Amino acid sequence: MKSLKKIKQRFKAQGGIKLVKQYKDAGVLLYAVLIFPFLCASKTGLEIFRNAITERIHRKIMKTYMNTTIDEEYSPDSYNEKVTLELSENVKPVWFMWLQGIEEAPELVKNNFEILSSSVEKERIILVTEKNIMEYITLPDFIFDKWKNGIISNTHLSDIIRLELLVRYGGIWIDSTIMLTENEIPWYVEDADFLVPQSLKPGRDGRALFVSSWLMTGKKGNEIAYRTLELLYLYWSKNNVLIDYFLVHHLLEVVFLEKPQLYKKIIPIDNSQMHTILISVIRDDLMVEDIEKQIGLTSFQKLSNKVTIEQKNKLIEIQKRLLSVDQ
Image (cartoon, rainbow, N blue to C red; front, side, top):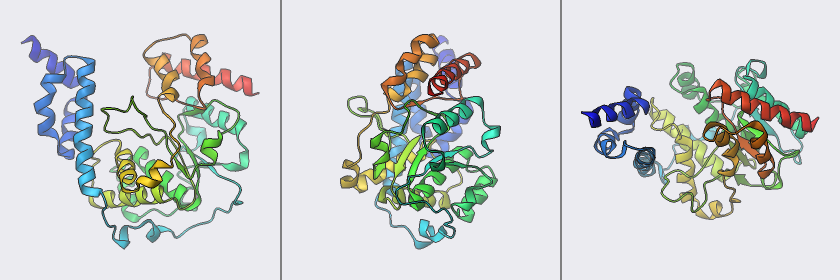
């Protein structure tokens, strides 16, 4: 009885019925039901469980989309109706998005935008909002309709938008939860044909997904960005449910396997160090004075709004200290 009660508690903590629906939509529910009781007893077991489910989903995505020929109607070129942004060839735009407008953003996002604006030439920074996004790109009707109807969330719409912008114009996409910790964007981001952070070996061993998309840079028309975008369009043209929260990561890895020579040219930057401040706040519960010593260890730090009020206050205090140095 105690074991059954513990399984129920773990099940509820992992998402409960919502998780069941997600796994059902992804076609991995039976597999999840079979292995969950054996792995739910510890945090390590749950991590193995999540990795196993992600691996199963990844195989399904690979089987469906690897080397798939895209019909012309789903090609990104079919939607390239508006190109109004004109920049010098030597200017690489920096894209930062908050759909509701920066005035409506949480303090943590506003601080990140202010830090970015104090470190990068203002003419390079383009704030993307719901009001101006159509000045730069044209989305397919089925994408726009599914977003308006709540089928595609703001988060997953941003996956499409960042790829559209990079394909059309090139540049650097920086998520709203990213804090730039240097007084300039590093050269390896500025000069890259295409770049995303990755989990590198040996930390990547045993993980189905090793790529992140919160920082993404590419030159106009980059093949990896273009192919990932057309696979995203193909997916959403045929689906009304999200098979996995990290869909764009799955598809990026599909493209990496399709284009191994291009993948090998990507500068390998590890994303682990870029999470240390967030981890120190959430897991280690360190004081701000101790955490801020980590600022100089990497050019970017991935923060989050999905934390407790106390944890968020620590992150904001770190941002303010960085801002005071910049000023």
